[in-house]
Length: 536
Image (cartoon, rainbow, N blue to C red; front, side, top):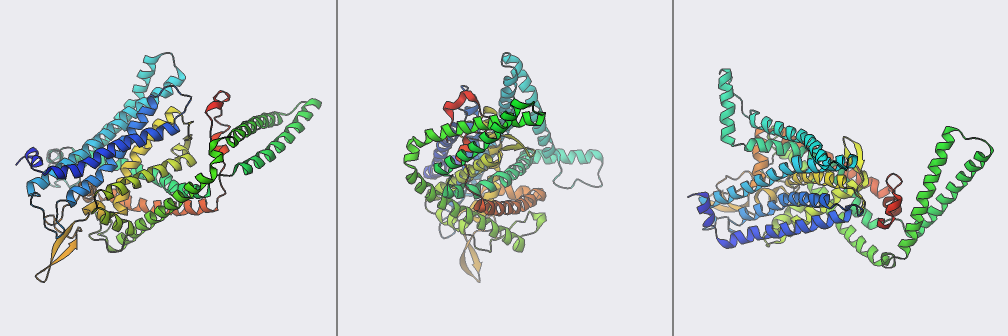
């Protein structure tokens, strides 16, 4: 029976239950991405191309994450509560479903690679070159394309490396031709899957680094900031008044000295800085007065209550997420197969609250879809929150700031670039946080216990004939077996993530409330002709 014939034999209600929520996730991903990008894009920019590119990029990334609940549903729905396979779940049908999900994963990953290594670099360098030479459009495109070839060269090198790295030992006693022939046969057997898997794992490492840097910060700071809020307008007014008086006093002292004699170069520079500071204070004072007359200020008590409620929910989830990941990591230290097997757990022996909730919710369609999608959105929002606080960095060098209504096109494109890799890495993070759900869902099998059937939750101890692993988990575990260094690196990076979250959590608790005025208007990028677009 062929793949297409087996898929046709799949009951229509199974396809509907599995893929209709995925279609809904597509629409929600596009809606969320467009609204989120619209909130941050620079309102003075008439060109909307960067917004469309960033929206499409974030939507594609969210789709790759949204496929996991579909994967979990399809393998779980094949079995009855008593652990037996349903009548329609024949071997051919199961294989067809697994293949269709696998091809969907690989298709999405291929689209992500094309987007991140061609579309986004080409768009980014086009904006960079256009800022330098806005008259020659063709020259701008050609120069941007040349820079993009560097990214294409990198991804081509990674694909070739992934295709020809021998994951199995080549014959030691053979000739050089035998070794080359061995590599060619291995490439033919994998049909290029190992090459794509290698590249995805390399990029996941980069995504994990960004999760450690940004997500750990936002996961701690975003909900606490919602609870603590920003400084009140009365506090802002008092601070501005004191700053204005201090700045004006130093300005008067330097100006009076300038009347009597010439100033030194250091004093001239100090005078210019003070005049710029005074202008900045005036702009912030004007913004403060406009905010006092706004509807938001009049409804501030209501919004403070709403923010406090969502902040409490957010901090509760952050702590549950932290504890669940910590428990899994401790379980792996105590009971895993070791670092050469990527710290794989045959069975989760320590209780994991978030994993338990997801497994139980999987039985109530489509509750697990909703919870999982909300978790991914929350982590994505926390990541952007971390970017707002730290700025977009390249090799630890700050490049752009992310602010509502004031993010330039290049920053939006780079934001999309980083988020696409971060969402890919979420797959690994979720596999660590909710391992049972992401590997077997709510499957049970009949385990022999002295001639009686003992209904047992599926784990890696069960045979492949009794339990079906999700394709996402199979992707992770199969490559971990071939190249254990990646899985071991993921494991230790999750420890770094936990440490970063703990440090950020303590720092945010003791840190004073932030100023909304300082975030809205900054002396480094303030422009006199864009007053109309500034808001808190």
